[in-house]
Image (cartoon, rainbow, N blue to C red; front, side, top):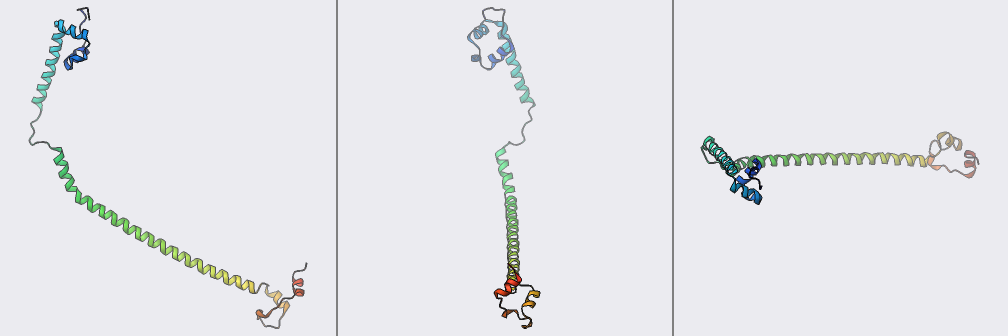
Length: 167
């Protein structure tokens, strides 16, 4: 800033008010030698000071001291019992649901097992009957009519099997 006609711009004036160390050495020298730039700096400082005074004048006076920590603690203590009761109710509801759910699952499981066992027993009885009386009734009549429906005494020899199943 060798030329005295070149003055500091607005940004440089603001930096000079905030902290003169932000300016370069040549800008600081210019500010020390230039009365115009010094006057602009003082005018800007006065504007800032006046804004500070106006904000203090317009600020409402507090009726009581503001203590956010004390207020938060007081409201938290007020809600803590309600939160605890709510938490206990939720736990009870989960416990009741859990118990009823697994009771139903166990009942359904045991009922399913009982039904399966009954169907298995019925299947085994039918399989045993088919095993004992493998031939249809009309073939049993061909073999022997003398037993009067008692099929336990039948003996199938090779001749009969060839008659039924010719090879």
